View 1: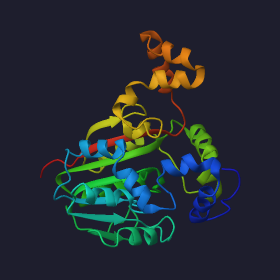
View 2 (view 1 turned 90 degrees about the horizontal axis):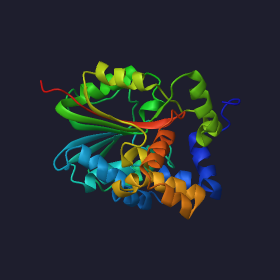
View 3 (view 1 turned 60 degrees about the vertical axis):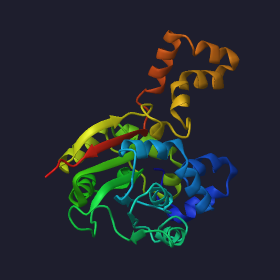
View 4 (view 1 turned 180 degrees about the horizontal axis):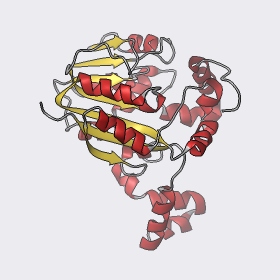
Length: 283
């Protein structure tokens, strides 16, 4: 990062919200000024549909921990999908992007708002059926401790899903990623770990990894470039069409060109997105 952060995260998001150049970024982060509209968009997104599928296809009657809940867009979506209760853990008191906004948005829902850090969860052992984190783990100062806490509060047989976590391979990639991140440049607070560090932390928490998803392995990681599985399959053609027009779209249908495009898309880009699905073994 170039110099010290110049403002709070709340001020940085407010600034970016009012800059038309960052409208797509704010939208992809679901940090719209209209929290209800952002929540409705997330609830009907291909990303959330895939989240529900990975968690077994139904949230009916389950108790969900939404770790790093932010403004509550995912918490509300889990309730809409049938969750019995959502525990929304968010340490930021901000009325704009933290649990101040979360309380207002989820006031009439079965959502318990908890002000806490992921490394110190004020929840009982085995008290939740699902632990869900969207773009949260890379913010942790102690990744291993945060994952141990997730494993502790998850019931035996419960599911853990961490999505859209930034991955870097070395300090140089970390520096490059942070230098390009607009919120980090204004307020700091961003981070990233290596793929091995994430997976070791998950296993160290006593969880069994069912699947690790790379940047283009699922809609969750590919959003906002694509929003459904059909689009995901057409990514090479979409990418080439954006660059070369109609000729690129035609080129993207050729198997050799598709393979080359996928290799380019899956290159080791600093801050690329991974997601992790794990379970806590039955007792």
